[in-house]
Amino acid sequence: MESNPTITVADKLRRRICPNGCDRPINVCLCHKIPRQKIATKTKIIIIQHPHETRHKLATVPVLAKCLDNCEIVVGRRLRNTISPFLDSICADAVSNPQNARRVVFLFPGAKAMPSVDIEEWKSLHADDNVMSNLVLVAFDATWKHAKEMVQSSLPFLSKFATQVSLPISVEVDGPTIFSSELTLRKEPFSGCKSTIEAIARCLRVLEPNGDDTESRLIELLRDMVKFQASFLKPMKPRVKLLKKSKA
Ligand SMILES: [Zn+2]
Image (cartoon, rainbow, N blue to C red):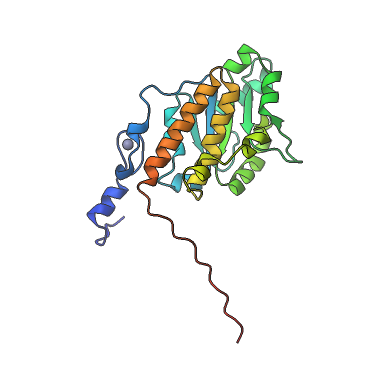
């Protein structure tokens, strides 16, 4: 692209991507928030990120994924063969060697057409060391509407080897999320972080041997990053609704 003479030095700085690992614009680098010793989990976490989410330069999900030592992000609208070599191999195992294939759960609230198992119930049915040490958790990072579309179109592939799980409803109604309670940042890109990372943290509390600790470390990091990020943002202007012109 040709350089635009109206771009200022500050603009250029804002657009430069940090070379030290966080992949964010240099002026909002979050490298110092990434723990040197990443959060270890037995569960392998795969986040399927909608391509729109990658456009949010301030998204926190990719940085938090870097804080986990067993987490991978796959960008796409639909899971199918050839999108993730890792899931492909599990899918192949599930067909040829179902007894020994790694168990996979994907997190999405149930509906009539897509019933889900409560994650605590799922765990009580699979409280086997071998299963729990090799578990894979798939989560979707997208707006609610996109996530629904992603899950629906991924089902032909996912349903071959994965079980749909959901968080107990009490988690949702226990109280407001940290975003609505502490920081009034409920709009994108923050709503996406809430639904993805917070939900993953809640799942890990159930699935991991030191689940409480894993959950609180992750939530603490998320809170810390959002707080840091909020200090850079201009306050949001309330949307002004256009009044309909009255008929003359
Ligand atoms: Zn950085």
